[in-house]
Image 1 (cartoon, rainbow over the protein chains, first blue to last red):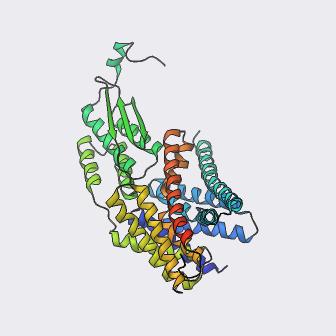
Image 2 (cartoon, rainbow over the protein chains, first blue to last red):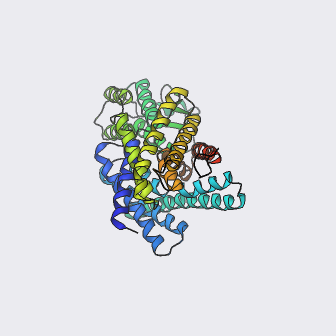
Image 3 (cartoon, rainbow over the protein chains, first blue to last red):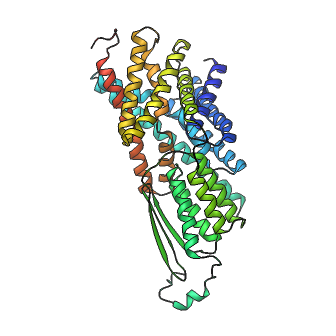
Length: 144
Length: 273
């Protein structure tokens, strides 16, 4: 893995998504940072031999926590950062492979891949959820 | 307490009288909610913002029920009032969501009177997108190219991905305006992406069909819907969460079908039909 290349492309891709969603100009760079961190977390875990589903879970937890920090510091809704941060984790490649196998009448492979895509999306959801619950617990402990 | 106002008329007099006209307050809340919902905010956040605005204008007992297709808002007071707004078109403009959020913060801080707030909200509603369409197409193109590299594609495919992704995004925005059926526009856009990618590979300008298609299709992925569906489900808004989830699923299906249609004609060796 070429680290510099991956850092640059994930930053630009996420910042590009922020532009598509009309994020206010001053926040676009932070959206890029969120996407970059989520993708690099995912890639490093994969390189370390972690299962893609667990890697997605951890990456979405990290990016969700980061978005909450950004949101609080800039007094901006969380989704502004979260959406750009989550997009790199969306299992587009797996879903595409599933579809390709359907077209080639290899339904056994297609179902396996579709399930994998489903599990990956589920782990994104759970990553966001864990982070949100974590955040609420911290807030409760701070302000009893 | 559990006692309703209807049973104890004397309780009404105990309510802190609002200094502002209720009608105006309801208008401000409705407009704020409508702008947020139309531009991609999470449902629970819209409800929260609406009741907060009502609160800070001295109407503490308001209820809002928000779904992706409509908002019901009611206030109890001297003259109980319930309003309904239909939301027919949804798009994603996070700048508007951010601006309404800032206005709501100023209202909570007591800096804005309802008249001024309404005026500001109208300004936000009628404002045009701050980012020009061509710039968005460029952004989509760049994202596609970068996703290709992230998915271990070759740099030789970078330019084809730029072109395919940019044109795919242009197709979805243009077709959406023409047909006004979002799913069909997404389907056609992914057909465009598929055909272009196959042409690039068939002519030898592109090398790997699979990574090229996956990278170029990324700007069409319903990222906002997926994220918001999850957050709404977590907040207990099952109606909104499920309907947004369904929308995201259908979008993904439309994209996948569009690609599948092209792939079923293209076998990888030249343009053999």
